[in-house]
Image (tube, rainbow, N blue to C red; front, side, top):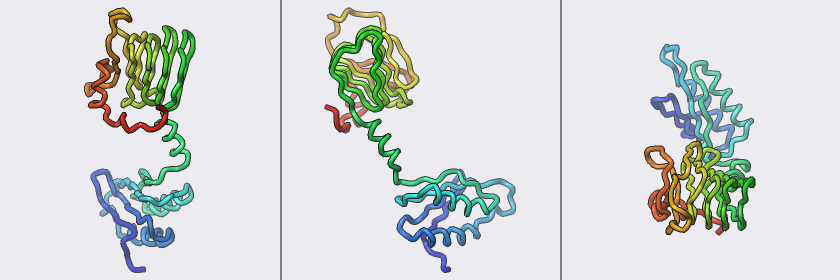
Amino acid sequence: MKTGQNVVIKGTKDGLTLQLNDKCAYNELIEELVEKLDTVTNDGQDALITVTVQTGNRYVTEEDKEVLKNVIRKRQHLVVEDIKSNVITLDEAVRWKEEEEIVSYAGRIRSGQVLEVPGNLLLVGDVNPGGTIKAGGSIYVMGALKGVAHAGCYGNDRAVIAAAKMMPTQLRISNHLTRSPDRYDEEEITESECAFINEADQLVIDRLQVLKYLRPDISTFKGGF
């Protein structure tokens, strides 16, 4: 077989990257991969070389991945680090939708109640002291936040918490935690506020208006409102 361009091998500081054509027949791809790997040597060195495989827009099943791994592993100095694809699986698509979706809830969260959603939460109501709201994404409270709010609860540092009246007993974003400062009465609150993780990796509270500069992607959220 004449060597084609279905497989492109690039050396990086971390090892080798194999870029695979996502439009050719899979058997042709494997044949060329075998041929090109035969030209890759470790120049007599004992060190292992890590390999990252990029399959582009080709959907790769677990069986296909095993075939790729076995072909590469036959060269004892090559170790498969990762196989990456631009195509998301159905499970990944469902999880992404859940994390990006805005769930609207109208009502008051009373003491002892916990409301948790996988994506972003829009609460039209108050959170009483002792009440808790949690979201995998951001939290928006169109009322008084006097209880506990935990945004980005699955590890999203980009999540924010916004409230018309920010008076929480505790705020959490991802693994960052802060308590509400001892300050003003509810009557003294004149504008909405937001909480976010700043560039210094600190959870801070500021005016709501700063969000459009700090998190411009928020305006692209779809659904829910």
